[in-house]
Image (cartoon, rainbow, N blue to C red):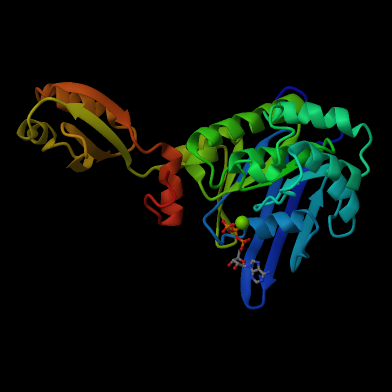
Length: 320
Ligand SMILES: Nc1ncnc2c1ncn2[C@@H]1O[C@H](COP(=O)(O)OP(=O)(O)OP(=O)(O)O)[C@@H](O)[C@H]1O
Ligand SMILES: [Mg+2]
């Protein structure tokens, strides 16, 4: 990470953080520790408690129990300071439709009494790729453009921490890649610490230095994506393509104990195999030794997806 802001060594720490709504425990003894300059993903299905956690970090709602430190401060005691140093993109970004992108940012700058507003606004619009749309009314922006305007808005006060609640939701895959690349660049160039939430692990895992998988208010796994995946241990899925006959494929793999399941894929000549983790080489050998003409092979589930599915009991929900 290029440069981390001075004095930002501790960023966000929660200890036994808990939130109840009536009888329901929505956040349950959450322990988080964000490192300065990292991109941290709070990942979990709908209703996991991600937004509730974020609102507590911002001092917008009170925890039932436990403690929070944001830049060394308790956000419920120092809401204004925290608000000044933490940029926030809410899950539903709201702008004044009748005002241009530029005017919307200018309005935020005035509300927050930010000096030097105009120069910064132009820089930021450029940084998020909205320079050309600056004089277009925000009501005519696409979702992706609004999301990018929201990120620019959150960056106006040059925050130490950026909290993005579902920054990629409802954006097409191309737009998602653009936004994630932008977040990565911002983290590296500005040294901001980023906390982002998402219910779409496969979208955001590549951009996160670390993730916490959050289910029903509890963190069930936490670490670097690669580290979590290697803890996985479950089977993996590969897809291969062959011009050999079905009989040949089945007899080549008939005795292979590491193949848990073999079925034809949608495309003719393609098969999906669930195999023991790490046995791709064995699969290739078995096919080749069995005289199968192997035309291609690729992993279809990347490892972390597997981890996620296990925790969420979800199959392909939420996929693009
Ligand atoms: N103000 C509230 N009063 C009562 N229950 C609430 C309130 N806010 C949230 N909840 C409940 O808390 C749980 C967690 O909600 P939260 O919005 O934090 O989840 P989330 O992980 O952000 O989900 P999503 O992916 O849908 O945004 C849900 O069951 C929700 O219904
Ligand atoms: Mg939410």
